[in-house]
Image (cartoon, rainbow, N blue to C red; front, side, top):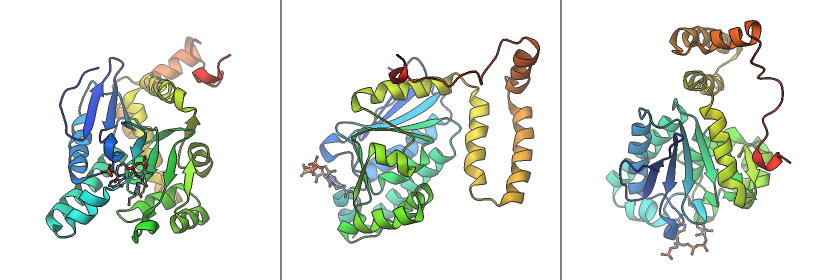
Length: 279
Ligand code: COA
């Protein structure tokens, strides 16, 4: 593991496979997001975007929590009388989410524990969410006399059904990892002791693919969400041509050659198995 830079509230390490592990590192406060963490995350996501050693980004939390959401003391109460600090933190959060959402690198949230309120912003920005079965998700804002703001209502509502968005925002009820998969919040849910292994398996699968093709694929899936049919057809046509021109590995031509001519490539032959499924 290589640590290129030290931060106060976040640990950033890159392993020799190209997985950069970002760990929210305030376990004593359940990794609640204070202004320092928000500003550091903005800087980290900005820098990793052009870090050649980083092939996949995994975001997790130290201790028993992914993140307990916005820091009620340092982000809310202490900035009530300090609008500049509030603005700085809020803006850093928004920029970080935007950088992560549109990152060319594949991103995985490895949810090891609590994930509340404001933590849904970065959760939704990640491409893939691997959660522990016993992780706990929830919109607890209603208990604090606030609404799920900072775009939490928007990203949550985009992930789950309209009925579930209303129900979980209005009751503040919690959701475990398995239920989170059913609802569309998480991609996979695995036993806690397998969490890291399963996350690494997914990360390796992504590392084995062309980085340029992956970047275009995730951006395409994200971009068409806000388009109508006609716009999406046009956009995807142009995006496909752009990829053919931009892909330095010419993956499309190679894939066709290996499948049609050399007959040594059968990507559709069988589903990839995760270690826990292998007998
Ligand atoms: N903001 C600020 N501090 C927080 C926090 C938050 N969102 N979540 C936890 N903490 C702090 C606690 O105040 C406590 O600090 P202290 O040791 O100085 O008293 C410390 O983290 C440990 O919290 P504690 O409640 O003792 O841990 P726990 O493991 O029993 O419970 C939670 C963990 C996450 C279930 C619980 O802390 C909680 O409900 N937090 C609030 C989560 C929330 O509603 N977030 C959304 C905010 S909009």
